Length: 423
Ligand code: UD1
Image: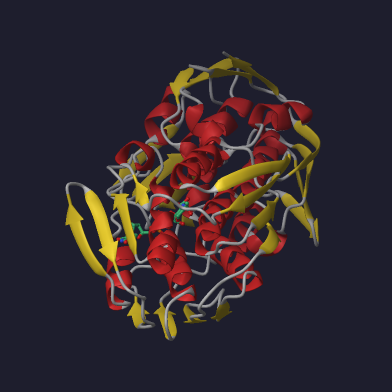
């Protein structure tokens, strides 16, 4: 299994480009199932999760052509199975996103229930309830969700918890339903907006995206379209925190500051200078490598967009381990998302966990050690900690990073980091 070896202590400087968003690309790939005409996508990141989704779609009969490094075309004119088997779904929860599109277009679907997940139980009850409200007959049998419907019917659906993939699944199903669907307490995440923009290009009638009430008027068919996936705000945010911690000046090209308000606010509070134009963000910081105490401790509390994203929580925990005072990180979305704490403690961090809050006392320095990546964002936070730690850090099980960060070590090397992948 691959490992990353990082020699800490180098301030980051230079420019890199931000990739397309994994969490936008995954639902958009599934949107190809809604039409018999080709869908062409640009800015699709080359990541493990994207490869997994492609494999699942190919298994169903979608023909996928790689047009360029990040450009693909998907043709779902000849679907021969509407089943997503356990072996494929268990490796990636986002596989549940085939449920809505297949049910809406073919009237039947069988998708394995996603198994347990490292960051909490993460049920899919709201996806199921929403489809039932649209008239689907749904049974859970032998670990599979089996759904049938002649044609889905528009409905008013209230989701009592904000769910990103739940909103996406129901929006895709509603696009081909008969009549109007109103999704209340819908997710406002930029990835939901990007999916909606792609669906509209395919002929869907959707209003209210980016607000918590989305109205979808169903149409009989969707058609061919091309779409460029929005930039990855979490990837951008991760490199922004890296620059703030190590110090230096990093410009992120193809990054959108308007999607990162909460993160930018917190970085400024920590003492970093953040500037931006319409498609780039620059972070300048003195950093803790040049002066101990250069970063101020900043407390964060995760909540649905536009509040502070849960996918940036671990990275801010890393920042706080070397900041000047005490901060709290409170996780309100997922119940078990502090697995990085133990590993950061191996690097010398001072963190206590009480319920869903971590209390982090900034230390003068961290020390390199061998640590293990546990989930995607936890792994990213270990990379950040390693960049400021004294000496060498070895990060094992980095397949988690490959799920969500395109060419991570190449991009960090480009900024001057001493980072190497060992096969
Ligand atoms: C998506 C993102 C993930 C991010 C998360 C929250 C993708 C592929 N993944 O995950 O990176 O961390 O949003 O921003 O886009 N819930 C229910 N019932 C449901 C669905 C969700 O109770 O039917 C709960 C979950 O357990 C969780 C909360 O709702 O506590 C939010 O989860 P959700 O937004 O659905 O996360 P994902 O869409 O899986």
